[in-house]
Length: 327
Image (cartoon, rainbow, N blue to C red):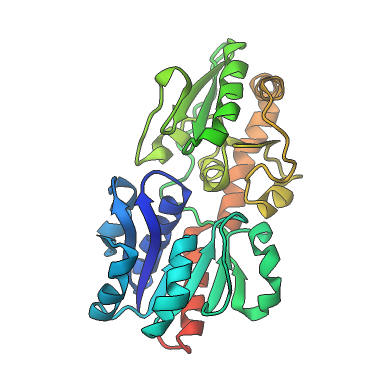
């Protein structure tokens, strides 16, 4: 089986790129022939592990997909953007491709489910408008590579050592107010130090990296959204949902509710507040038992819910369904 994972956008640093790269790596290990396609690939780093496992990384415009798919005998076109989904429903079906669409959030449009063999949603929220599709709809959350994202060696905080905080994620204009609130909250405290693993940071201190796991393993608390929350928890950090909105600290009590909204901030839609962020920082810095409990909780939840190998097997089952059970 040859699967083309495609998004009609430039590949950069973000959740869709990481999602596709992780899925491609695991599918290759399951014996699937995988091609990753983007309109343009500015940075190949996020895909290096997948390519090392056998995936191909190509630049394709929508006008070039049909010729590529016919020449390379693609069986399944798996769209990861609205434009890709629209192409698959029209041109893809016309040349006989099986068509699967992943919805990465409720804002990703799907003009019509006609011409789509299966819809995969990364959260219950994203799946909501498509429940009428019944067996054609699957909810498969973002998978985390638990070989890479795992707790580092235990290193308890020394007396007086600042809380090690990280912001992780791509920063668009709508997220900047939240980042600025985080910066103001940290600036008022001497017991917190923040690193920005992102493409933008206040005062020009971003740290772009293709290996965030290395930094997350050293963190006490991570501020992020979506798969960044899952990766942080897998690495044994406390996690706070901070993006356009603020849902705060992820705990055993609110985990299922925040998962439903893909750790997006839309569970409460509270605006980011420097005062609230500062109070959360104080709780974690001053309450060793709270922080230790969340550090233990994260990896257990990640292994139970987001193992990328399990999510890849579930995705492969979707492909086999649309292929009529063939491999």
